[in-house]
Length: 71
Image 1: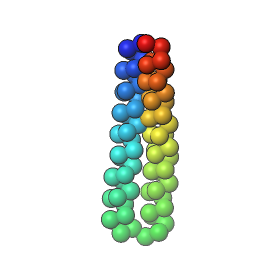
Image 2: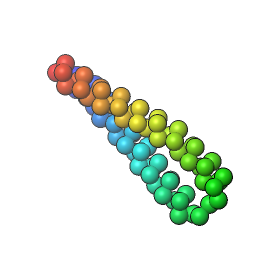
Image 3: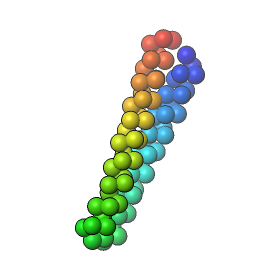
Image 4: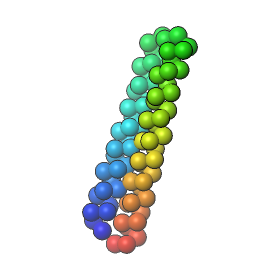
């Protein structure tokens, strides 16, 4: 069960890293002073990565919960 918990922690940290990347990317895009079309194009990519990061983090937390229940 320790392996399950460690895998969950790794997934959660990977998801958190993705979320932090999204925050930094949006912050930089807003400060760059891009026009509306360029900003939209950048943010569309960030939304996809953000959803994947949230899913990864949620799966990791689920693995942690299962590992703790089974331990």
